[in-house]
Image 1: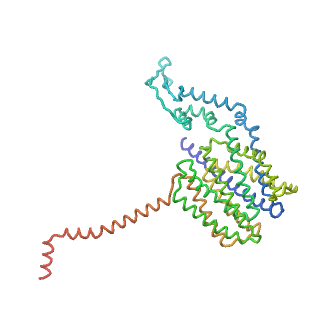
Image 2 (image 1 turned 135 degrees about the vertical axis):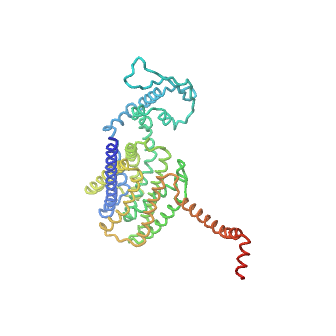
Image 3 (image 1 turned 90 degrees about the horizontal axis):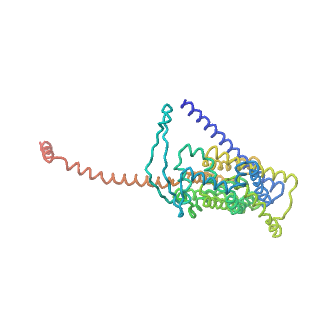
Length: 462
């Protein structure tokens, strides 16, 4: 029965992994198609309005807030978040039999614990065991309070109160809204830079240069570390150097564009990658664990604040002459709405689902497939011919993306340093062996008896 159960779980896990991989591949196709459609709107439909496109598609994130009508846990957070969290803390305190004194020390009393016996024993002889009546006093930081309480719970009790503990650990609606307010501007600027880049150069070049966000993340995380795993290593330095070399080659290849906007598009792509890295590093410093932040709710509030706060940008850009305000035609409206619903809202949900079915590492590595897919799309659909500099620069950028993802996933892993230490140890051992070889020969000669040498000489003379 155990073997059948383990085989069933293995099959279910493989199906789960296969479904996740298929979903991530679908997301890659959607993102490349969304970029190609945006480029088509800017260049073929002659509606080159990056700010309008970014504002419309980012505002459509507000559709996630329909979860407050359709998703019961969100509604419960709105109706009684404070009462619910207070009641949850009280229930946890009762479970652990904790009393909190005036200075915040948790004093845990050890009560009577009944032992479980077979059912054939008489109920009148039910035995109990009394532990030593010792009080344990500890002062823990607030960040470890929930984990400390979880460690003291028995497994059945923890399973029974799992949903309640998750509710306590998650950020409230107010906290998520505050974080969304601070980061909606950085998110919007990163996406605006990406849209500006699409209006000036090919999709493949934009996606390759945008993939350097992982390298900017490594650099910023080393400057502003949120934990010990953000320290800079030789492997990260190699990945940065490899990526920068590829970026230089791709940027040189974009200078051959006939309209002369290739360099500007490359700069916009790098600016978007840097802004996205700022967003990632800062939100990681703000939220220490990913499961504490409800990501769909976060994006919903980002769309809401984008819709309420960033509309004055139309007036600023219109009167300064950078982007004249003009409503699109009916066909372009359809393209933008489809692109926003599928390429922004649905793709984000599918990517999160794919990461949940597989892992965050596989989900991040799947993003790199947009590079070859966008190259194929540009060659087949737009008949673009890339120079050898482009392909020579695409390879190191592609490899550095894999390296950066692996280094971010496996904390404190520095394969370059490990390899250098092994090479150094091998050289030291080889040098030591070479030095010991003459000494061993001298020792062997000194061990030969003198009478044996004289006997050999006499026999030689005779």
